[in-house]
Image (tube, rainbow, N blue to C red):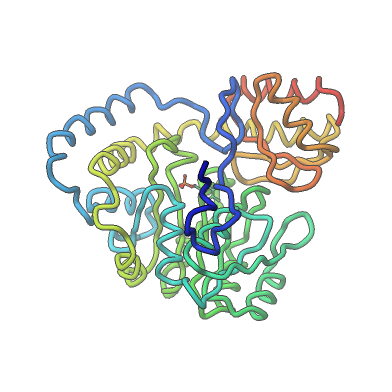
Amino acid sequence: MVSLFDLPLRDDLKGLTPYGAPQIAARVALNVNENTHAIPEDVAYAIVTALAESVMTANRYPDREFTDLRVALADYLGTGLGPEQIWAANGSNEVLQHALQAFGGAGRTALGFEPSYSMYSILARSTGTTWISGERDEDFRLSADTAVRQVAEHAPDLVFLCAPNNPTGTPLAIDTIAEIYDATSGIVVVDEAYFEFTPAGTASATTLLPGRERLIVSRTMSKAFAFAGARLGYLAADPAVVDALRLVRLPYHLSTFTQAAATAALRHAQELLAVVGDITAQRDRIQTELPDLGYPTVPSAANFVLFGGVRDPAATFEDLRATGILVRDVGIPHHLRVTAGTHAETSEFLSAMSEISPR
Ligand SMILES: *Cc1c(COP(=O)(O)O)cnc(C)c1O
């Protein structure tokens, strides 16, 4: 039998395993930070209607510039952004890949502050970019001093900031982002995948865009918008950055169906985002109740909570799984991460945590 390692595989891919959380059927799936609320039926019908119309034109290639979708995304972001400042792809993972393809590559470096989103280093490697694993402060916070010191030390071509940070939930102050930007001559990517879950009044890094042509702010419809299955991520940046990304995208990378579905969903943004308050209430409930069970939590501004006090994360993961609940072992010693689900799902998780024997 032939294995992939018997093939003339790229040297830098030898020995690797594909990234991804285990896809296990579970009653209560709180492992990949999805919005666990279903799409409202009237919104689903509106999306289906748009899709049905788009099928009639699927004999032609889609609009390569996904113009309607970019207008809708610019409108959603507001803050004076125009469609020429918007880029989108099949999930923000692909958006980030485009950024690395355009601004990273062989002989270049990208710096991130770990623990953070694992895809940054994986995308760096697959684009031939050297990954530099930077460190955070105590309790997973990231101060301007700590970040600026490492930016000065490594002079990276790209800096990845995750605000709030996955898997810790830690917010990142907008002033810190501005200071990091000033400390580098490279591209600064701010991943705001969880922005909609941050406290009211939190400033988006999109407000920093005027005058900062090396800044990229990425977003996704996978989390707050409950649209993970549709695969639509996007970014806001200077129009020149968008021009750079056009050099590396595949022609027609966003299908007719993706464009139609995402544009229709954005017309119903308010309805889709109506559950965000319920989700953040469950996040806050987890942060209140888990410590009472002996599991201290890391303060989160996202739709998930990283908690400690777990003697054996793999064993607790299995204990929960046995009761039909899926959480995420992110590889941080004595910690697990749980997504804030519906009230009922969160109750199940909390009661399971109180019942399983301490590990
Ligand atoms: C979930 C997540 C994304 C979203 O990825 P998509 O490809 O848009 O589904 C991006 N960044 C972070 C930090 C995430 O946790």
